[in-house]
Structures are given as structure tokens and as C-alpha cells.
Amino acid sequence: MYSYRRHVLENRRLYAKCLVFMLLGISADAMSPVLISRLIDEGIFSARIGHALVLVASLFLCFAARGVFKYVQEFTSDRISQAVIHDIRSDLVGHIERQNASFFRSNTPSELMSRVRHDAENIGFSFGFIGVFLVEIVIHCIVMMAFLLRISPQVFAVAIVMMPVIGLLAYREEAKGDAVFERISDETVSLNRSAGEALGAIRTVKAFGCEEVERRRFSGHSRSFFHLNVSLETLFGRYDGAVSSLGRIMVALALLAGGVMTMGGDMSLGSLAAAMEYVNSLVWPMLEIGWVLTNVSQARASARKVSAVMNRHEEVPVRLPAMSRKDERGRNLEFDHVSLVVDGRRIVDDLSFSVNEGCSLGIMGATGSGKTTIVNLLMRFCDPTSGEIRIGGVDTTHLPVDELRRDIALVDQDIFLFSESVRENLKKGAQEELDDEAMMHAAALSQAHGFIDALSMKYDTVVGEKGVGLSGGQKQRLCIARALVRHSSVVVFDDSTSALDMETEKAVQHSLDTVSGDGVRIFIAHRISSVRNCDEIIFLDNGRVVERGTHESLMALGGLYCRTCMAQYGEASNERE
Image (cartoon, rainbow, N blue to C red):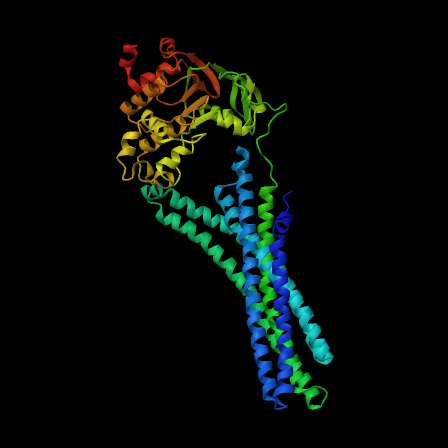
């Protein structure tokens, strides 16, 4: 269960600082009416000019001190807000990154971004500024009412009568606002998702002439968001109007009661002025309490959303006894009767193969045959329903996930480059400090050094989100270089040369053959040219291995692999074989 108490404890010194300066500020507020009372009674009416000047100077000093105290309090409370926001966002992102594939099937990126961006901010704001402000309102009202009671119990009685009515209104607004904020939070996700999909797939949108369709879809979500916020503002308006009127009525009634007492000789004019200052100082908390409670409602709605994510524990488990490959046990890769069933559907069925050190395996098959599922199982993005996957003789489910993934370099079919320089993108793959020589060597092997050297700032060129400004082939070559700098035991190329022309692909394949070393290489592809030189090739159909062998033996077999080759290269290919 995710607990927010930690954030309070970690910032306890800042909270203590806030409390000290809050009490000093409230004390200054409480002393001001006392000085005003003395100024009127002892200075003005007594015609003591010197004494009056001293009291005015004291009053100015009190106001100035109040400003300083308030500044320190608000600065510190805002710092608490930012610290809590930072911690919650860090906790959220770290927790999300540890989850397995099923977690991401039920939580979209737009939902998770909304939790990290908006909900964390709402919670942090309530822990800092809003929380401190709420405490200030409570203490301020208690102190002001205590001073008012000391001056005039009758005026105090008039003021205290209105407080329960205003409290009831604030409570009702908070209850209604809580439900509205829950719906606003959900609609924010839909709004972000709609905009993100339309802009992220702008080429597809334009290609199919769907601009107007996407505009209407976004407009629908925006309109719902608009109506929800109008409902919220209507709720605020009713409360603010009612409380403002009640506050003014309270001031008027207090003035009437105090005026009658002053005219009857039971209260001095200075005391009346002080009493009215205290009554006025009770009005602004009444106006602000609704806003404060509304923000608390918003934070509660956000906290429920964040807790729902943080309380889901779908981290990749490590089976006991936990083991390590730090002591090298070899680099052989084995799939031993591996099966995977998802929602009653068998994705991979009794899959078995092995790849020895220094050897390569090609995997082919039609779309949906289970090729990429092999990558997901190897990387432990999901675990097999039955069977074992071993690296160096160690079952991968007994290895710490971070250690396992350090041992594997993946060039995924979904190309992704970070919005950083070429250098920083390549460094993402390195497990240790990457020097320029090693980086350029990897780029040369992937046939990327040539175009990188032609960029305006060479390896320091920022390539932008998803490698904007680069061709598909250039992005793939950078991703291959990023994997090569990793120096892992297993390197997996998942359809990673599909955007390369035949000549470049052949050059990349030749480079990979020359640096194979003792590692295991797996090539998953649709192109025969990507796998034909592998030591062994398996052909999948409906999650099962239906053919296996070398390129030559599979061509002689005349099965699915041979028919695929002939479809790609024609009859002449078979004749050449």
C-alpha cells in the first residue's frame, strides 16, 4: 500500500519552519488591531502627538514584519510542494518502469502521463501550499476569535453565529467538487490521448484525409472537458457569492452590535475599531476555505488515481533460489519446451531450440507466428506458461531482471531514438563509459558513421524525438550501433534491417559476421537475406517450429522457407541454389 506519510516526514523541517513563520505572521495580524485601538484611544482622542507617532511607527513595523513572515512561509510551503511533486513523480516513474507487459496493456501511455504530470502536481500542491494554508486559516480564525472575545463577547457572539453556516456551505461544495474532479481527471486523459494520437500519427491522418474526423473527435473531448469545468466554476460561483454575502452581513451585524455598545458607553471607539478589524480578518478565511477545500478534493481524486497505479504490483518476479551470471557459466542460449498462453490463446507452443556460443540463429515466419514473442520471453517482458529459457545453463527466471537485460542487446523492430545527440543516444546502450573510438567503431560496423560524419555537428547533432530528420534506414543503423556498444552475451535483431537497402544490409551483415566473437546472435526477419547466413534457421507457424536447418537444407526441403524465398527472389533463386 502506497503511503504519503513519508513525504510529510521527509519535509518535517520545512513544515516546522512554515509553522514558526506562520505563528509569527498571525501574531503580527493579531497585534495590529491592538495598536489601532491604542492609537485611537490613547493617541488621537488624547491629543498625544508623540505617543500617536510611536504607535503609527509600531503599526508600520508590524505590517512590514507580517510581509516578511508571509513571504518566508509561502516560499517554504511552495518548496514543500515542489519537493513532494518531485518525489511522487520519481516514485511513479520508477514503479511504472518495473511493471511487466500486462500492466501496460491495461494502462495507456496517456493515462500514465496524466498520473505523472497532473495528478502528482495536484497532490504535491495540497501537501505544500494548500495544506499549510489550511492550517493557517484554522489557527488564524482561532486566534482572531480569542482576541475578539477578549474585547467584546457580544460582537464575538454575532460573528460566531455565522461560522457554522459558512462551514456547512464549504462542506457541501467540497463533496460536490470531489465527484466533478474525478470526472475531470478521466476526461483529461481522454483529451490528452486524442491529441497525442492525432499529432503522433499526423502523417497517417493527412494521408487518409482524416483531419476533420480527428478534429471532431478532439473537439468532442474538449467540449466535455469544457462543460465539466463550467459545472465546477458554477459550483464555485454559488459558494463564493453566498459566502461573500454572509461575510458582509456578519461585518454589518458586528458593526451594529459594536456601535450600539459604543453609543451606550460600554465600548470605546478604539475598541470598536479593533473589534471590526478582527471581524474583517475572519471574512477572508471564509472566502478562501471553499477554494482550499476544492483543491483538497482535487488532490484526493488525484491521490486515488496515483494509489491505483502504485498499489499494482506486477513487477517481474525472480524465482528462488536467486542466481547470478557474474561468474561466467558460458553463453549458450536454450529454449526448452517453452509455451505461452495469453487469455486462453496459445501464442507459442512447445518451442525448443538452442544457440551455442559464437553461433547465430535466424527466425522466420508469417506475421503473428510468434517471432517477436520470442524476444518478449527472452527479455522477460512476459514469462512462459511452461518450459524454461536458459542462458549459460541458468534459468532466466532465477536471474535478477536488470542483470538478465544487461546480458542482452536488443535492436527492436519499433525504432526509437531519444531527443538527444547522436552521442547520447549511442551511450544509452553502453554498460560502461563509452569512449569516442568504441563509439565510432560501432557506428562504422552498422554503416552509420558515414552519414553521422556528414551531419552538421557530427556525433553531437541532436536528432530530435524519434530521430526526426533522419530516414528510416539511418535510424535503424543508429539503433544497431547502440546495441553493438553494449557488448552483451546475446544480441537480438528483431526485423532491424527492414528499412535498409539491399547493399547496406549486406554490408551490415558482413560486419556483424566479422565481430561475432563468443556471443549469441539472433536475427528475426521477413527477408531471406537477413537470415540466410545464420548457422541455423527456424521457421515458425502458429507459434510452433515447423522447419529448421541451414539455408541450403531448407531450400532442399522445399517447404515454407523455400516458398518464401522463391516468392521474394523468384525461380532463379532456386536454380542458383
